[in-house]
Amino acid sequence: MAKIKFNVITSTCVPLPLENVDTDQIIPARFLKATTREEKFFGDNLFRDWRYNADGSLNKDFVLNDPTYGGQILVAGKNFGSGSSREHAAWAIAGYGFRVVVSSFFADIHKNNELNNFVLPVVVSEEFLKELFNSIYANPKMEVEVNLPEQTITNKATGSSEHFEINAYKKHCLMNGLDDIDFLLSNKDKIEAWEKKASE
Image (cartoon, rainbow, N blue to C red; front, side):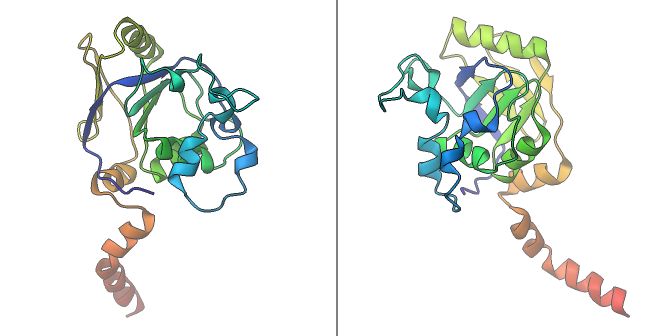
């Protein structure tokens, strides 16, 4: 898992205007036997059954196989990541190279799994999401700016911007490239001092 510090990301986008995309569609169940975060393996199999035909050939109609679109931001439809709580879905998204997923609603467990894997889920209004899709289709080279310190997302094609919410602890971890264990270790002295004081 790449622990990359997150600040401001400006990128083109990949549009996936489908609602209720569940974790089995993000990474099919047959790939869950793997227990380690081999990012390339999971990234290669992100949306596997949509990216490939039954004979293993590329489905040229699926957006990840369309060279028109690319970038570090996935713009998805409402209710992204529903279904089972498998963390592998977040591994696949991160392994493919997405740093941000934008939607008007995320399933809670999947949203937390993304945050734990250094992918930022950005919740926007349905109106803003619709405008994003329209802008991307009008110009696939348009960019979106995601500013984590300010907690804003900006459609650079229109200038429209929205504020998004994020847990303060997760924001700190993303901005400093820390997972939960790293955070505890970075506060080891404070924890030991508190334990010593509590035992007195």
